[in-house]
Image (cartoon, rainbow, N blue to C red; front, side, top):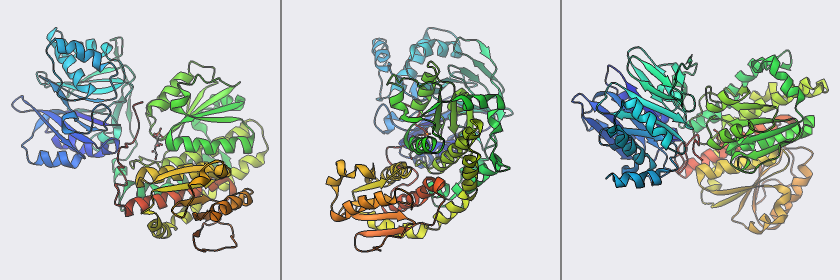
Length: 609
Ligand code: F6R
């Protein structure tokens, strides 16, 4: 949420900052801005409401050049989206870009007002700029000043600070919001996400919680929260910088939907060996944790939570391991009771979701056997702080609506289940059946993608709708949830999902001829049950859209549309059935003229509470 890039170099860094912002735009697109020190030693600060293109246009109309600067793309927390609230915020010679929330900014501002400081914006960040300025007047080096300011801040921050009088250095600080340094020769960079830095360098240093870094063009000094000088290891990123291009697709979401079979195939190739699941990346010592677990607690948010919901059905029905799934923001404040020999699994695309991270940290104070993160972003906080890690390896997901991260999470969860069954000495059939089904999964997804044109056509039925209901049973109930989430977030159609059996306990009252009801109904042992629910809707005049591979005796009669879905092996149906629903939402949003990749009010990676 929000994106930061900073640069210090021997060359003009304006284009580097703008390019970095474009690459970070998926993290927030309410406004953007940059501040550089120009050749005359003056700070030039430009800020614009809206996407990065607006800032870029403004830069084109200005003569702007400098070798040090900071830039930001914003997702509004404190203060509405407006130019005045855009970052960088300045106070005299100090400019600052900030991700996160400073909770005690009002009390700090009260004190600063007595010293004559007046904020011109509604943001918490401007208060920090004034505080740094005030503290600087009390003396000390730039670094020492920031080191004195940080303990006064309550909340979360990833921030980069520029002092016009010190145009040879940037100070960066991390607490609760990630920052990564990009190292190069004669120039260094800092960003909130490696994606911003990849075209310029792949040599990365992740800051740890509480770290402060002083970055010059030729040196990087890092101090921990106690002020001790520390070394943080440099890694070489293997993310290709062109993996964040749209390629032949119109939207990132479209590209990411289409990539699903390829990324899953690649991940399976690395893990399925001799018809068994090889998770050697976990380390053999750690397998004992999986062998001993008696209960699984999954914690996640949004789409990742929906993946956890599918896994719950799998763990309990296939290997009889009790499993609970909870939304991270509830888990962290609920004082949950830890079950005997319980193992915590966090699911997250970004690995930076504030609530999921807080839940993981909380779990360390509780009696869990250990924690496993299933995550897509290497080097993310969740990955670095979990005992065990399984990477989804889906490649960067830029579209705000999660797609490939969902199906890759499910693929990993299914392999994990097979692994646990093996470690626990369960019937070899379990692992064998899962492996057999997974082998054909990429092909099944490709078959689902062939439904694209059909979904584009079907989308026309929905453009004037204001509501939609999604129904499913068993593992398809979470798929209905995920289908509804996709629809609401990019098409702005209010959508709710229900376990189909719940229909008569309330939602049936909503059914009329203006209510589309999407039913996820593969041919399985729950089909007859869901057919009864379909009749309940039909009897009340609702328009039904039934995604199924089963034969329905009534075909395409008015208000009953059978969307014929190819056969899929039972275990992997949830993974395959979400694909046509993703495509349907994509096409509805497209027809409505919405910004598919950057839906209103949302941003990728929710790093604030
Ligand atoms: C929905 C979506 C969000 C995320 C949620 C968790 O399409 O993208 O609901 O799933 O914010 O994010 P991660 O998986 O990064 O923890």
